[in-house]
Image (cartoon, rainbow, N blue to C red; front, side, top):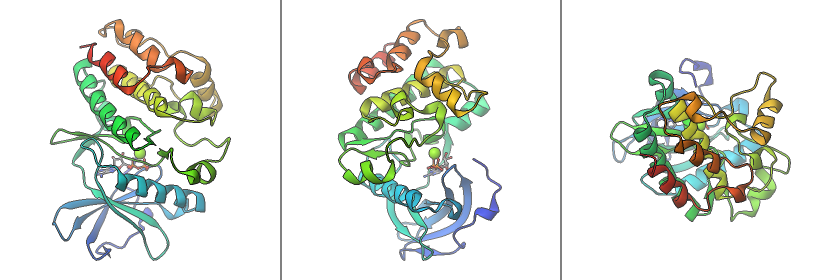
Length: 287
Ligand SMILES: Nc1ncnc2c1ncn2[C@@H]1O[C@H](COP(=O)(O)OP(=O)(O)O)[C@@H](O)[C@H]1O
Ligand SMILES: [Mg+2]
């Protein structure tokens, strides 16, 4: 993410969307998005408007973005960012309007402060798992758990952001349109074996995601670092190799953490924890 890309401007500052949301200025550029800060004129509360940049406005990515918007609006949970509305600009660019979060992502925190203490990491992971579990109840799999998609708000709550890759298990359209067979979307290091292989994902895919997220939070290293040889090599690591033991990366960690991580990061979904609640319990038992 960078903050200095002004050429990505998609919305004229001052534009009012849906007669309600005023867009003020660009504040972040993500891998798949441009974010603006603005105001909800009915409540005076700050908002974030996420837009698909025009360079990425292919039919498929626009469809994916609109799907994200629909799903995001459908989920209300203390550990999910609140999404107010979605729409499309006159140019056809889809956007969604969210509450503006104040704070930083786990990615930012790791970069500036290094690894989290075990108790902090467990607390954050438990909140992430609560959010993930709530989404699963709606038959939605997040599929993109990683440090930049977990937001630590200044007031306290941990919020999942970015439904960009989420999959609605109930929707036929999801299976046919947005990710066709053999087509993998996501950041290689954070993809589960089933995502790499473009096989079916299910709630246990988010268990893998929670595992790689936790590993990085307590060690400061990715479980499956970007390989020198490129994406294919990273995929091979994900499919065939065990990550280095977390306790080798950070000797202050208890050995039991290796056992929990190894179970969450089993290559076969069937070998992971049976439920998110079981993983949550195992994490809580570490502190
Ligand atoms: N509602 C929000 N409030 C404040 N910052 C946000 C919000 N949503 C996203 N961000 C910031 O913008 C970045 C990119 O947003 P994200 O939804 O993850 O987009 P992408 O699909 O491009 O990854 C996040 O990592 C975070 O720093
Ligand atoms: Mg993101």
